[in-house]
Image (cartoon, rainbow, N blue to C red; front, side, top):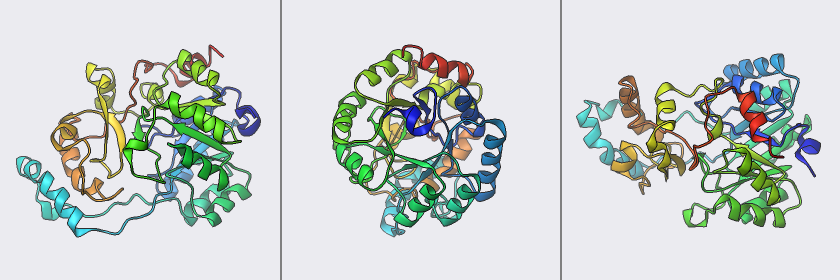
Length: 345
């Protein structure tokens, strides 16, 4: 079954939801171009979410997606916090940060009943999740207003689980993808496969549409994924330089630099593996640092360093999310890029 039939979109192009570097503007532009624009809702407060959804529904009548995290909130571990702050202590001293003034914890909460109530007001055509699916009651609430549900799988086992528990479309997220790994049945990074190895295995294993994601940044890559059985392609990194993206000047400069060729999976910014351009923090601390607080609790301790360095125009302690292939990043309109990505189909 095609994505046009399932999601109602004209082009099999999904703009990946990217928290922190985009708002409704990018999603609106992609949807109006015939793809599926996505709004990252994982870090938005209730009123901001409502405002962004209002903007989308006012400026497009095309299908769009709203994305959320559905992680488990971990218990606070004093041991992990000590390990993490000890690792950061040389940097605290170098930048005169009082560790006693650095808060513990994170405000990043998973999809919940209050968020579902807001969605019910707007009835978005598509709702996607990262790290699995929400609990059954919340998932049924989302489906009750007609939304199609998408979630990411990083292994065949995760894809089978998503199909069994109600996903309508699966994102086959290859290890090349920028941002957080969607892994949820295992924390073993050795289980992670490249997009063009993972995609055909998931296509063969499930009976619902599969979308390829990870390392694809141009029309040739999109066409190649479709040849391997993908119903569509999700791209995030390719859109980071678009006019409608909110990517910071610092992040844009990093994407346009030679350093953007060197990305790595790292857990130091949030506690979960995610792909970013290698910077000072990743070189000095990891990039994988074992024993630190679980997602999203690791973020609090490194945030003061990020804040100080960003004020100086430096991304040394910032998560410069990017996939392994930045060659398709262009400072053009999101509509122009969307049409170009679908030009070989």
